[in-house]
Image 1 (cartoon, helix red, strand yellow):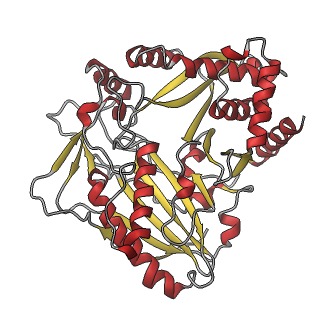
Image 2: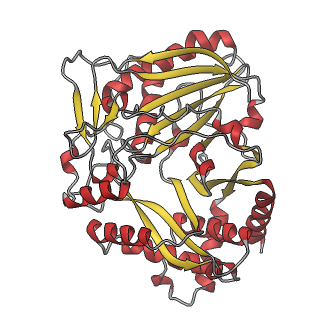
Image 3: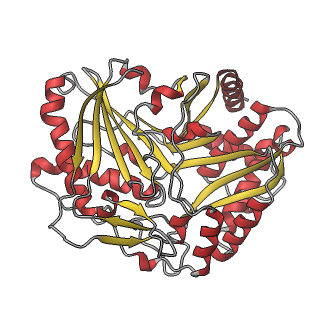
Length: 447
């Protein structure tokens, strides 16, 4: 994809001047994600009157910049950098008085409907719409943004965030808050509603201190350098698939029918059903030896699982990776592969209410040590509960959203299915693998 750069803005937070740096310590939940970045893009179709270059650069961009400055005043740590001073046992976020967030504006002559669509398309085209991961340095920035105009069609907002500073819920709260302020500017409103107001108090994270040291050991080398974006091969394609409410209910009934367990023993949430279905399709796509080791991973939110509970508006990470270790591909290759995946994932989710974070951390660390070479990994980004499709900056709600960073491995993405219920799921594969996967996915919903 050819992009023409239009401008680079360095947006300062709208806050009262401060002289001393703001220093925010990282917590146990942050330390797991020290060397990870998350990249996402959100697409907006514009009306004929609002999609011209003149309107975009005279109205939309100034409003986006002004509202970004205002929202950063609420989410001040996002304007800073992650730093690890030699004398400190762990990294922290530092915001200096002159710190800014970079917002880069591009133009593209590509067909917006194709780029923002949900069919098969090159993964490299979607990747071009988000900022590159922070340059390899010892103090990476927390957030960078990119806006790309497709003249007379629409635009998209690309986000690259440092995972050590925020999880998906925090990122979505920031994005919703930005949209809220942008749309409300005409009314002179800059305050955030309570459900979007961030909570910055890190002392609320009640986790034994020794777990932080365990996470730092797991990270290995004492560095904050984030692996750089490499080129995505032209043989890697992306697709976004949908599971309607009817599809999800059909999968739920199928699990009840095929499982030998009682219905009360099964955990049949939409997340479990969708993930289990995608996973079994992926394992079958690769086929091969049934003795191939596999493992499923997901990030569990602990906001309501700690004592005391953590507010939904907490600014930071409060998720931890949960692994289903020790399985073979043959478990999922048979006709009962889907229900097996449902039982395994459901048991894992139910265990979160029975085990403390100390036990879950030990299980994760032990599981990582026992992973065999050549293990097929399943991971998932996002959630079907974030509500990102409600983010209207003043020119309409999104037509699509994509987790770009899943193109680095065989990960799935999950989000709500626009505003009509159900879920949308995405993945990236080579073209011949994609064709097999789609066939399995569609056939399983018909039969």
